[in-house]
Image: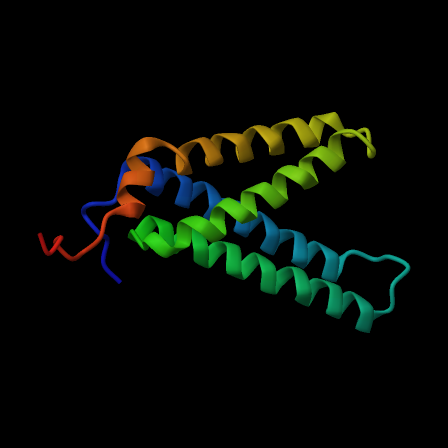
Length: 132
């Protein structure tokens, strides 16, 4: 795994943010597993396992962006849009503005980085020269 030297700084910063979001997901999965609750152990294992798989995928996307893999940008944009919807749900129906607003701010900032001109130009660049 080598870093692509042509990767814009905005893409790398977005990759770090997404990687951190994935690590928060891993911590959440562990908390679901060990926290006592009304669910049976088998149900907790299933729920924690589901969140762990999703969190691992998000961590992998963050690492891919940091390494300069252009194909990671679109899945990360979709992930951030989903998280933005979750932040909206946490803010309004759940009335937990102290969690929802910071989550939304991080998502909006990450989307800003990923949709900036340098990152768009980097993603659209091809490795082949035009045959003109």
